[in-house]
Length: 102
Image (tube, rainbow, N blue to C red; front, side, top):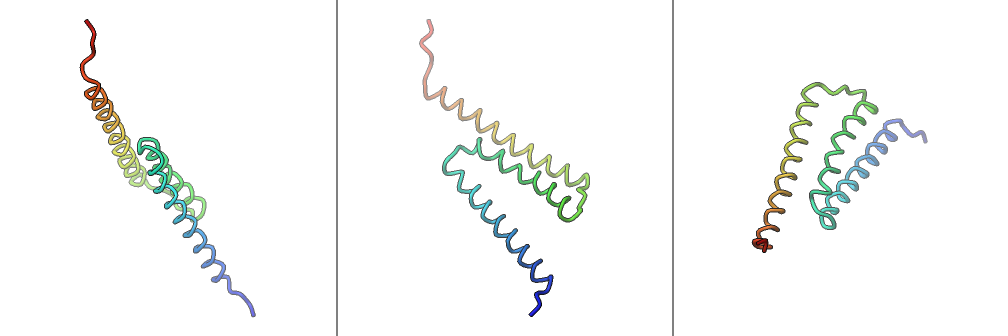
């Protein structure tokens, strides 16, 4: 009984999908154990990996629209992280109360 090459292709795609799903679950679960400001930048590396693997595996050359869209998504995420950090620092200062400097 011969095995068709389509079976190997299907098996390879299934393995890749399972690995990607597992990695996504692990990354999502990491938000329980670390602050979002630490974990979120690691989430953006998935865009870089998608560019690289798409080029390497499929010969897909990203267009300028891909890079512009990725930059917009990354910049907005970085801005939200920065803003939340600033708000958190302000809340800490307000909770500490006025300083006792005379």
